[in-house]
Figure 1 (cartoon, helix red, strand yellow):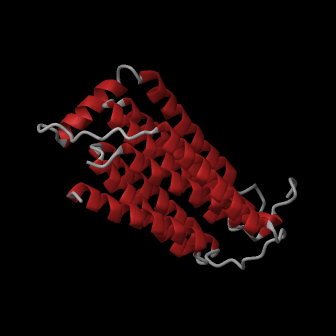
Figure 2 (spheres, rainbow over the protein chains, first blue to last red):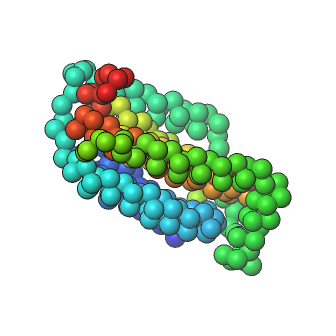
Figure 3 (cartoon, each protein chain N blue to C red):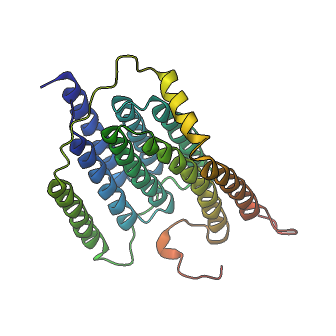
Length: 173
Length: 100
């Protein structure tokens, strides 16, 4: 077993384990921390795949900004514990069955597609700066329009969040 | 080196666990986190394919998915806070009326 495979297997174990931890933890804070661990392992996957810029964005945007927002809302609402009540009693069983079916189906198509293309190691002169340079060249030439649309999307999300949480005039919460 | 299909298998397992989380959990915040997990699994598949085909387009698509996820989290958490104000609960089973 090569070193790459060893690192990959340990990371895959941590990634799947933290995802299961998110699924079964009863406390909202623990679920959020499991998700942070999962994001970190995925960031290391990106490094192994030769995408350092995406890996660093993953750590700052996902594990940093988004999860801080989640933890903030969990603590703001005081909703970290929730009794596991469900109206539909058969829902849990059917959810496990359907999730298992989904996994089997995806697994079948991965196996059927015979996607065994081996990932070539990055070239010897590969470094962080060249990755960012290549990506930004592509981003500001071929993908310029989606980039501009993204700015409108972020503006709309910002205004939407403000409008949704603003308190009505006269309303005292 | 690690074959691409291994990354795809990890991605598929993470996506399925996220889908199960959406179906099983009743806490709106945890359901939301499961959606993030599914987005993340898709991103992992994107980067793996980008590496396989030696192109940067997949990595750029992940970049766009990240911005969409950030926008989604901002609006979604604002919705959850608003629902909590009116219903005093974020249990999804209690959100059964359109008019608060």
